[in-house]
Image 1 (tube, rainbow, N blue to C red):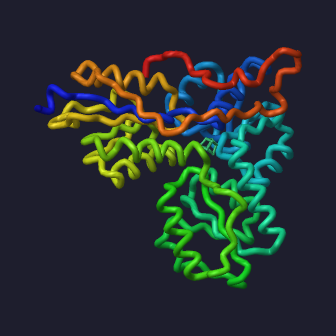
Image 2 (cartoon, helix red, strand yellow):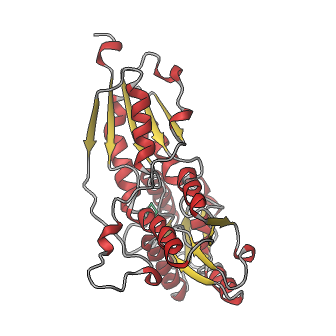
Length: 334
Ligand code: SF4
């Protein structure tokens, strides 16, 4: 059989929006409804170009720092979390704040506070400069050292090798983080683990799903933005799991015909900040080129949802926070 007459797509599930991203996007939408435009948002609410552009069209203004927000205005903190210093700055400027930090990032902040209170040296495995890492390390800057992968373990210097704990960014590669922890434990045999995994369920599940399809694919397309850590990891995981090629695309307009040369099976997945409409457009593009046979491979059923920040919770009886789930942004040209 030739590649042409058995063309197919394997569509990974879970993919796309996680509970934390869903909550953060709805937070900005509800804030716009409740308080009116403009609503300021510190940093990209989630790392996805389409989401940011769509919210901008509705009246959100994205800023890098709180000093760009007019005094007394409302600012939303992004899903990646902020350090206590940012909360203080906002309070000093009299800003009304709504915190859309993902509860699973807040969990890591609390672990950092606890380990710091016990006077540990804390090794935070994560990408230097990433907003989440800046926010978490800001909880206890005098206790935390950042290690950006297994190769950086040798540079760690601690005061007491028996009082060393580790934490991680929520969106890392599961396998690479394990390698970093193994290397740390080799140096510090009494290394103290976090109470539960810091890499979140959504990151782990999306990596497990792409691992399942990648060995059968000559090409894996990951829909996601270049600054989305969990999306970039999906490309790496797909390649490690056996895909011949894998590319990250913000949307269907970035796909290239030459990627399909000699390809029979295309894998498709998307990062945790990606609305499903962008995946649908990729599938349409593939169908137009003979890849209309789509099989969804589900490796895990996700049911987690998070309540909105307290400032936006419905007060009327009968309003359901469960309606947060599966809300997607409207179809707009990308
Ligand atoms: S990727 Fe994980 S940590 Fe980040 S917003 Fe989603 S659920 Fe929360």
